[in-house]
Image (cartoon, rainbow, N blue to C red; front, top):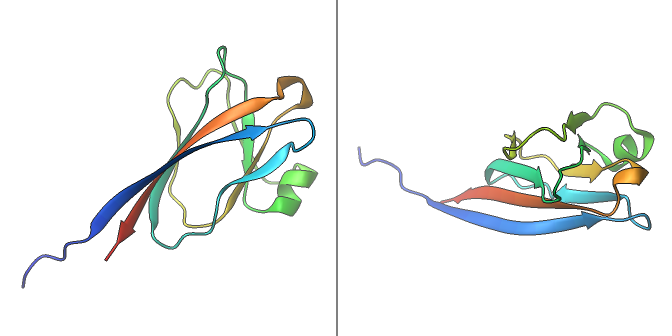
Length: 104
């Protein structure tokens, strides 16, 4: 049989967390997403946290913190929606988001 071919695309954007809007969705639910890479664009970098729901992000429950020492983009291999937040002292904080999307 012929190998299956599909299109791979990329979505590139930035999200800025601010004191007025400290919790934001950085990745929407996307069943076609293969991977995503997130990184703080500040110099020096500041830590930020990622959560699987808005409620968890607002409550600070069950997330993962991307450390300030991380100089490589943080990989996420999920199709789920993802929210980000950071400590008030780190705001404003801009996060670069690169998502790889695969389509038939």
